[in-house]
Image 1: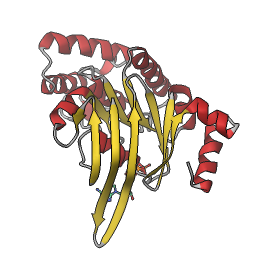
Image 2: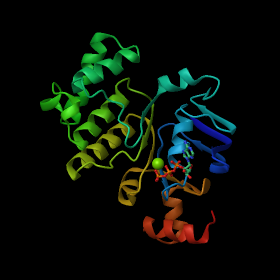
Image 3: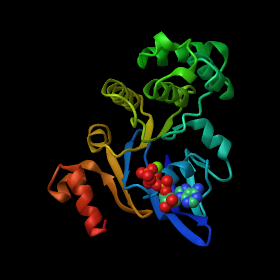
Image 4: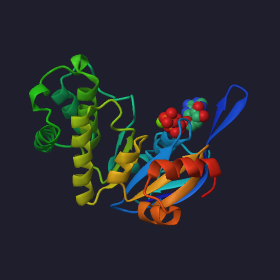
Length: 246
Ligand SMILES: Nc1ncnc2c1ncn2[C@@H]1O[C@H](COP(=O)(O)OP(=O)(O)OP(=O)(O)O)[C@@H](O)[C@H]1O
Ligand SMILES: [Mg+2]
């Protein structure tokens, strides 16, 4: 469903070259829920942006549902929902509903589809009370929920979230987690980065661990627990970083 082949991304920062992602090859199957773990600056956001066709790899190639992210970015974007930490992409002057309607139209949904989708999402996220209020006055968590709904408005098969629960309170995080479980039952492919190990442990089938742009582990959580003889993901992650090996 998603394949990265010898994928690298460099950034030119003044005279220095930053290698944000180095020679990554991996596959993510349809219906898989994958967590991306890595320290600040490890390359998580860069990897997600490349998969979302928002950033081109400097080397290598990425295919999403059979489409190349550089040659066929529109086909890729149609099939995925993305939400990047911090940038909600919402318009402050519009209400929550107007924002969702706007993004629904951008994805080519008709009025009936938009209405049904908004009803479903606002119910699931407990946003009904403030759908007709302007986003400009929303708290961080309220915004985040609308942003998650926005990312899912076109009912995409693939969902990429960059630190989705950052800034959410426990109730909203739980709603989000339940929502991921629902999406999983619907056979959606979900890839998200997180610094919250319990969240990854509770939701994911497998993980990608990155360190300085390199993948140091890619595989099922179960096999990781077995090989490390521990189910403490925090401990496993830290010990892998220290060893710096896969
Ligand atoms: N547009 C850019 N210009 C220059 N350097 C960049 C750019 N985007 C990312 N980088 C660099 O690439 C590296 C990886 O950054 P990235 O944002 O992917 O990390 P991250 O794993 O998402 O970190 P965090 O947990 O802090 O969000 C960092 O060294 C960062 O400074
Ligand atoms: Mg990041």
